Image (tube, rainbow, N blue to C red):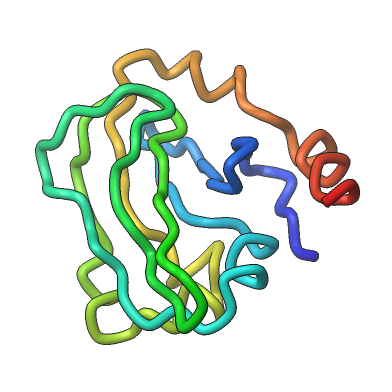
Length: 127
């Protein structure tokens, strides 16, 4: 399982990468593997304000629809419109082209409170 060191992780299998004050969010390699073939992504609206842990969008696979949760509080500033035409990118490149949305965190320090790569690897080793 690919678990990039530079990201932070949630117990619900979202990843976050903080760059220049913006948090890029997607689902982990473990999550996309569990979902199997992703066929549709319901993206959040730009400008939407969310609280950490709040359901923000939905990823649908051939197996199930899964809620995606905001890893930190903030406002949606960008979405990956390319996923409308290429939802399979979540499977093939979950940490690259398969990112889902970007947040402007209201409290950037919240990111530091999320799981490190080592902590996330420990979590998924028990599932």
